[in-house]
Amino acid sequence: MKHLVSPSILTANFANLQKDIEMLNQSDADWIHVDVMDGVFVPNISFGFAIIKQIKAIAKKPLDVHLMIVDPDRYLQEFKDAGADVITVHYEACTHLNRTINKIKELGCKAGVALNPHTPVAVLDDIVDELDMVLIMSVNPGFGAQKFIANTYKKINDLVIISTIRNPSLHIEIDGGVDSNNAAKLLEAGANVLVAGNAVFSATDPNAAISHLKNIN
Ligand code: DX5
Ligand code: ZN
Image (tube, rainbow, N blue to C red; front, side):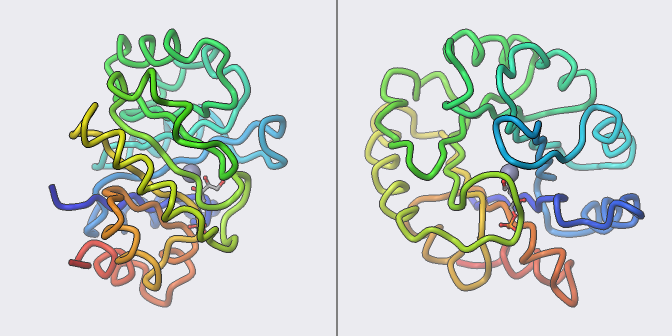
Protein backbone atom coordinates (compact mmCIF):
# COMPACT_ATOMS: atom_id res chain seq x y z
CA MET A 1 0.00 0.00 0.00
CA LYS A 2 1.24 3.48 -0.88
CA HIS A 3 1.59 5.50 2.31
CA LEU A 4 -0.94 8.16 3.29
CA VAL A 5 -0.35 11.81 4.16
CA SER A 6 -2.56 13.43 6.78
CA PRO A 7 -1.78 17.15 7.18
CA SER A 8 -2.59 18.47 10.65
CA ILE A 9 -4.69 21.62 10.63
CA LEU A 10 -3.44 22.60 14.09
CA THR A 11 -1.01 24.97 12.37
CA ALA A 12 -3.56 26.16 9.75
CA ASN A 13 -4.92 29.70 9.66
CA PHE A 14 -8.03 29.60 11.87
CA ALA A 15 -9.07 33.05 10.70
CA ASN A 16 -9.46 31.57 7.22
CA LEU A 17 -9.80 27.84 7.66
CA GLN A 18 -11.88 27.48 4.51
CA LYS A 19 -8.91 28.53 2.37
CA ASP A 20 -6.65 25.92 3.98
CA ILE A 21 -9.24 23.13 3.73
CA GLU A 22 -9.80 23.97 0.06
CA MET A 23 -6.04 23.80 -0.48
CA LEU A 24 -6.04 20.33 1.16
CA ASN A 25 -8.95 19.27 -1.08
CA GLN A 26 -6.86 20.10 -4.15
CA SER A 27 -3.65 18.60 -2.77
CA ASP A 28 -2.15 15.10 -2.60
CA ALA A 29 -3.31 14.81 1.04
CA ASP A 30 -5.19 11.58 1.75
CA TRP A 31 -6.73 12.53 5.09
CA ILE A 32 -7.12 15.70 7.15
CA HIS A 33 -5.68 15.33 10.65
CA VAL A 34 -7.81 17.07 13.28
CA ASP A 35 -6.24 17.51 16.74
CA VAL A 36 -8.69 17.83 19.62
CA MET A 37 -7.14 18.94 22.93
CA ASP A 38 -9.01 19.36 26.20
CA GLY A 39 -6.51 21.20 28.40
CA VAL A 40 -6.55 18.25 30.83
CA PHE A 41 -4.98 15.31 29.02
CA VAL A 42 -2.60 17.77 27.37
CA PRO A 43 -1.59 21.29 28.45
CA ASN A 44 -3.35 22.97 25.54
CA ILE A 45 -6.92 23.51 24.28
CA SER A 46 -7.63 23.43 20.55
CA PHE A 47 -11.23 23.20 19.29
CA GLY A 48 -14.34 21.05 19.42
CA PHE A 49 -17.45 19.92 17.59
CA ALA A 50 -18.58 23.23 16.09
CA ILE A 51 -15.29 23.72 14.25
CA ILE A 52 -15.12 20.07 13.14
CA LYS A 53 -18.65 20.32 11.67
CA GLN A 54 -17.62 23.36 9.68
CA ILE A 55 -14.48 21.63 8.44
CA LYS A 56 -16.57 18.60 7.44
CA ALA A 57 -18.90 20.77 5.37
CA ILE A 58 -15.96 21.86 3.19
CA ALA A 59 -13.61 18.85 3.32
CA LYS A 60 -13.56 16.36 0.47
CA LYS A 61 -11.19 14.03 2.34
CA PRO A 62 -11.72 11.81 5.39
CA LEU A 63 -11.29 13.47 8.78
CA ASP A 64 -8.62 11.75 10.87
CA VAL A 65 -9.61 12.88 14.37
CA HIS A 66 -6.95 12.58 17.08
CA LEU A 67 -8.52 12.89 20.53
CA MET A 68 -6.11 14.19 23.16
CA ILE A 69 -8.83 14.20 25.80
CA VAL A 70 -9.56 12.31 29.00
CA ASP A 71 -12.42 9.79 29.03
CA PRO A 72 -13.13 10.00 25.26
CA ASP A 73 -16.04 7.52 25.54
CA ARG A 74 -18.28 10.38 26.67
CA TYR A 75 -17.97 12.12 23.31
CA LEU A 76 -17.52 9.43 20.63
CA GLN A 77 -21.06 9.81 19.27
CA GLU A 78 -20.63 13.59 19.03
CA PHE A 79 -17.36 13.26 17.15
CA LYS A 80 -18.98 10.83 14.74
CA ASP A 81 -21.90 13.23 14.27
CA ALA A 82 -19.49 16.13 13.73
CA GLY A 83 -17.91 14.24 10.82
CA ALA A 84 -15.06 12.05 12.07
CA ASP A 85 -14.09 9.16 9.78
CA VAL A 86 -11.13 7.90 11.79
CA ILE A 87 -11.21 8.29 15.58
CA THR A 88 -7.98 7.81 17.52
CA VAL A 89 -8.00 7.73 21.32
CA HIS A 90 -4.99 7.71 23.63
CA TYR A 91 -4.08 4.48 25.38
CA GLU A 92 -3.22 6.58 28.43
CA ALA A 93 -6.72 8.10 28.54
CA CYS A 94 -8.79 4.89 28.38
CA THR A 95 -9.52 2.58 31.29
CA HIS A 96 -11.58 0.16 29.17
CA LEU A 97 -9.82 0.40 25.84
CA ASN A 98 -11.46 -2.67 24.32
CA ARG A 99 -14.90 -1.18 25.00
CA THR A 100 -13.88 2.18 23.57
CA ILE A 101 -12.53 0.61 20.37
CA ASN A 102 -15.69 -1.46 19.91
CA LYS A 103 -17.81 1.65 20.31
CA ILE A 104 -15.81 3.56 17.68
CA LYS A 105 -16.26 0.67 15.25
CA GLU A 106 -19.97 0.37 16.01
CA LEU A 107 -20.29 4.03 15.05
CA GLY A 108 -18.88 3.12 11.64
CA CYS A 109 -15.50 4.84 12.09
CA LYS A 110 -12.00 3.44 11.78
CA ALA A 111 -10.50 2.96 15.23
CA GLY A 112 -7.02 4.02 16.25
CA VAL A 113 -5.01 4.06 19.46
CA ALA A 114 -2.30 6.64 20.12
CA LEU A 115 0.75 6.05 22.30
CA ASN A 116 2.65 8.78 24.10
CA PRO A 117 6.43 8.74 23.60
CA HIS A 118 7.05 6.87 26.88
CA THR A 119 4.37 4.20 26.33
CA PRO A 120 5.78 0.98 24.83
CA VAL A 121 3.94 -0.65 21.93
CA ALA A 122 3.84 -3.91 23.93
CA VAL A 123 0.83 -2.56 25.87
CA LEU A 124 -1.22 -3.13 22.71
CA ASP A 125 -0.32 -6.81 22.48
CA ASP A 126 -3.83 -7.96 23.47
CA ILE A 127 -5.75 -5.53 21.29
CA VAL A 128 -3.67 -4.94 18.17
CA ASP A 129 -5.73 -7.31 16.02
CA GLU A 130 -8.88 -5.24 16.78
CA LEU A 131 -7.37 -1.95 15.61
CA ASP A 132 -7.39 -0.18 12.27
CA MET A 133 -4.50 2.08 13.27
CA VAL A 134 -1.84 2.76 15.87
CA LEU A 135 -0.65 6.36 16.15
CA ILE A 136 2.88 6.65 17.51
CA MET A 137 3.45 10.09 19.02
CA SER A 138 6.87 11.31 17.99
CA VAL A 139 6.58 14.39 20.24
CA ASN A 140 4.79 14.87 23.55
CA PRO A 141 1.21 15.66 22.55
CA GLY A 142 -0.13 19.17 22.98
CA PHE A 143 1.58 21.44 20.50
CA GLY A 144 2.66 21.69 16.89
CA ALA A 145 6.19 22.41 15.70
CA GLN A 146 8.05 20.42 18.37
CA LYS A 147 11.27 18.47 17.92
CA PHE A 148 10.96 14.91 16.62
CA ILE A 149 11.93 12.19 19.17
CA ALA A 150 14.37 9.75 17.54
CA ASN A 151 13.28 6.75 19.67
CA THR A 152 10.23 6.67 17.36
CA TYR A 153 12.14 4.50 14.85
CA LYS A 154 12.64 1.83 17.49
CA LYS A 155 8.94 1.95 18.36
CA ILE A 156 7.96 1.50 14.71
CA ASN A 157 10.26 -1.53 14.52
CA ASP A 158 8.65 -2.98 17.67
CA LEU A 159 5.17 -2.43 16.29
CA VAL A 160 5.98 -3.91 12.89
CA ILE A 161 7.13 -7.12 14.60
CA ILE A 162 3.73 -7.43 16.30
CA SER A 163 1.56 -6.23 13.42
CA THR A 164 3.20 -8.38 10.73
CA ILE A 165 1.93 -11.47 12.51
CA ARG A 166 -1.25 -10.23 14.14
CA ASN A 167 -2.63 -7.50 11.87
CA PRO A 168 -0.80 -6.97 8.57
CA SER A 169 -3.27 -4.32 7.35
CA LEU A 170 -2.73 -2.11 10.42
CA HIS A 171 -2.09 1.55 9.68
CA ILE A 172 0.98 2.86 11.51
CA GLU A 173 0.67 6.64 11.81
CA ILE A 174 3.46 8.92 12.99
CA ASP A 175 2.54 12.26 14.52
CA GLY A 176 4.87 15.05 15.59
CA GLY A 177 7.88 16.70 14.00
CA VAL A 178 7.48 14.80 10.73
CA ASP A 179 9.18 16.57 7.83
CA SER A 180 11.09 15.98 4.62
CA ASN A 181 14.23 15.09 6.62
CA ASN A 182 12.79 12.12 8.52
CA ALA A 183 9.84 10.99 6.37
CA ALA A 184 11.75 8.52 4.18
CA LYS A 185 13.35 6.85 7.19
CA LEU A 186 9.96 6.59 8.93
CA LEU A 187 8.43 4.93 5.89
CA GLU A 188 11.38 2.60 5.57
CA ALA A 189 10.93 1.55 9.21
CA GLY A 190 7.31 0.61 8.47
CA ALA A 191 5.17 3.69 9.03
CA ASN A 192 2.41 4.13 6.44
CA VAL A 193 0.56 7.28 7.53
CA LEU A 194 2.46 10.56 7.99
CA VAL A 195 0.95 13.45 9.92
CA ALA A 196 2.56 16.82 9.29
CA GLY A 197 1.47 20.20 10.64
CA ASN A 198 4.34 22.63 10.74
CA ALA A 199 6.16 21.04 7.78
CA VAL A 200 3.08 21.72 5.65
CA PHE A 201 1.51 24.94 6.92
CA SER A 202 4.75 26.81 7.61
CA ALA A 203 6.13 25.93 4.18
CA THR A 204 6.22 28.64 1.51
CA ASP A 205 4.19 26.29 -0.68
CA PRO A 206 2.05 23.97 1.51
CA ASN A 207 0.66 22.16 -1.53
CA ALA A 208 4.18 21.30 -2.72
CA ALA A 209 5.20 20.22 0.80
CA ILE A 210 2.30 17.74 0.81
CA SER A 211 3.22 16.42 -2.64
CA HIS A 212 6.81 15.99 -1.52
CA LEU A 213 5.74 13.88 1.49
CA LYS A 214 3.36 11.87 -0.70
CA ASN A 215 5.90 11.17 -3.42
CA ILE A 216 8.71 9.84 -1.26
CA ASN A 217 9.66 6.26 -2.34
C1 DX5 B 1 0.57 17.29 18.59
C2 DX5 B 1 -0.45 16.93 17.54
C3 DX5 B 1 0.09 16.88 16.18
C4 DX5 B 1 0.65 18.16 15.67
C5 DX5 B 1 1.73 17.84 14.72
O1 DX5 B 1 0.03 17.09 19.84
O2 DX5 B 1 -1.03 15.66 17.80
O3 DX5 B 1 -0.84 16.35 15.24
O4 DX5 B 1 -0.29 18.98 15.04
O5 DX5 B 1 2.33 19.01 14.35
P1 DX5 B 1 3.80 19.09 13.80
O6 DX5 B 1 3.85 18.31 12.52
O7 DX5 B 1 3.99 20.54 13.63
O8 DX5 B 1 4.73 18.47 14.83
ZN1 ZN C 1 -2.25 14.70 16.14
